[in-house]
Image 1 (cartoon, rainbow, N blue to C red):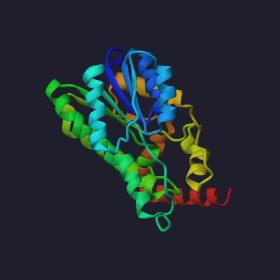
Image 2 (cartoon, rainbow, N blue to C red):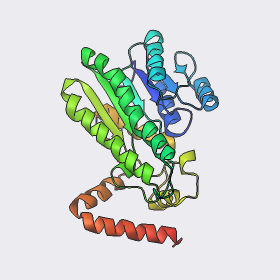
Image 3 (cartoon, one colour):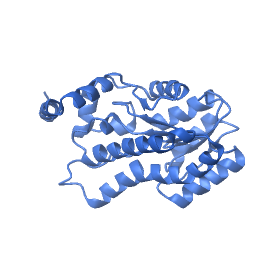
Length: 261
């Protein structure tokens, strides 16, 4: 699918990958509605987008609020044709120390928000015979995330939901892509938690604009799995070929990173 002339919604658009996606989609000629809970950062992105686009603060875990946003977008920009479920949180570490409310927040943003959006958009897409859902997951959703159990578990679930969407509705005009990068230079990767150190040591840390370039190219090909870091495919293949060996390697990686080796 070419993005020019399309109406696009990007969640988590106040910074990082979301901002890069919103700006790149606009550069491709799309009408962009950017949203985030971070109103101040979103306002700045709205200024960068300029006229003919929208920047509206919304909590994507609130179904009523998200539905209201989509109603506004469709009234002002046209029917939503492409939805980037990009908002995400990287919170929590060892489940022994992570309280229930952190788990709940991780599931709400990283998984349930995708379900809420799809539930709202699918009837219109199925009626029109066309729509595109792009889920931002992570390499952690294909492999796992050393250190952060909530992130690893919810990103696996995000990949699974994207797979389910394309299996169930792919023959009815609904395209689906799932973005699974490793390290990207965003605020989410700036900490010194074990999970952040592992990601930074695992491979190149890309700029958000590099990821946006990869996403637009994949959408043009209508490709399900988007891997800005090509080595993720190699890791994923190794995992499938010899699960026990892969698990042993991940344990060794955790031990080396935890001790600073």
